[in-house]
Length: 273
Image (cartoon, rainbow, N blue to C red; front, side, top):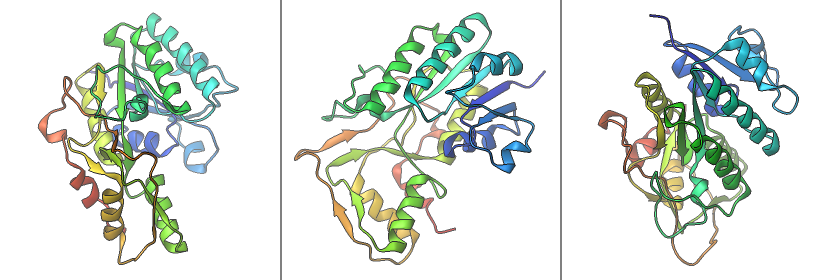
């Protein structure tokens, strides 16, 4: 049986690269990078791709993937056009698109957590971009698309943790949002879940965070305690007087028990390497 062929768009970014590392030993995995780094230039599974300059069609024709994972960041107009071209390709070919979306597609609804089939509505430019692309995918046959809605991502090498460490060393205040109730994930959990979904040929909408919720300030404080014995300054930012939810919980499409986790597991993962 030949190996499933996977193309990860944005495989040089934090999440894209974590997904590449998780999948490359199991599937015939390719990735794109935008800014040159020796590791990517020397890896024959990687292609240089500039969303604003290059047409994605050429790359798709060359690789002919059965699975495309979209983890790109960058110019919003270019992202929209790229996804339009991908959906055209998918309609013509045996191919499924996994789109890394965000809890921000619900950031206009702040009174409760959000589930897979809730209506999306966003106040942020970023959330609206994700909704626009999601709506494009929802017009595809269901068996050809997977929308992965992801909450805040942590992990030892994540941009968020790197930023916290930098702030601690500089002794500048760490911003926390005491009214924000959220769920979380990290690169390890997320990549294992994606691996499972590809293996099982799952499609549809998935909410990829912890099964439980925590306040942003509590979560960050617990992580800082894990990083080391520091006494950082916290700057409390109140965007509203009420509690505000930014949490994506699964209701209809639950993953198997061994792939579900609580926020405590994400906290426990942060030990200073």
